[in-house]
Image (cartoon, rainbow, N blue to C red; front, side, top):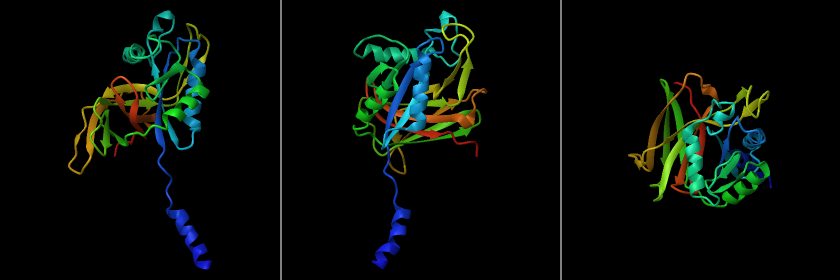
Length: 247
């Protein structure tokens, strides 16, 4: 009895938690859309609360530009993000784009809603994922993203990465949200496609990309997200990490 009790603290100290299953939650949103602020708030709550046991929700806020000509130009919007959303529509069930739209793990889309996102993320987390490891460091005016895999990625997949920034907000003075201060979560600042992973001398496979950093981005608030996704469908693996400062 005594020896068992003495061994217990050692067991507690050496135990490690099981890895969480990553699930990517994309939100297509716009500061010019009156229906979007509640969805932005929902994405923020999901990111902070991480409500699903054993699941890591990875949020991505893609601001689209097709609302920009209706009175307010969204400073975080990009035509590339609108094009990404349209690709989902082309290969989805309803062939349309709208805001706010959430896409969970590349295949389950719906009007942005917190409860629906939890439900769909729990379902997506049951699917096995390809393990990814991502690191990100600052070199000069760029972030260097390195993604490692244990084996060659499955056929029909591509590896892409995004830089997101937290703590962003805007005081909107025109358009549907005129007079409101809007707060955002995980705003995508840049998205890049990585080259095909190559065999690494130390084993496994590796891909790397340099992403220019704009002067106005708050570097301590940046995160790097790496995603392995089928060309027209589901996310097969994902990982996220804070941007490491210059050494």
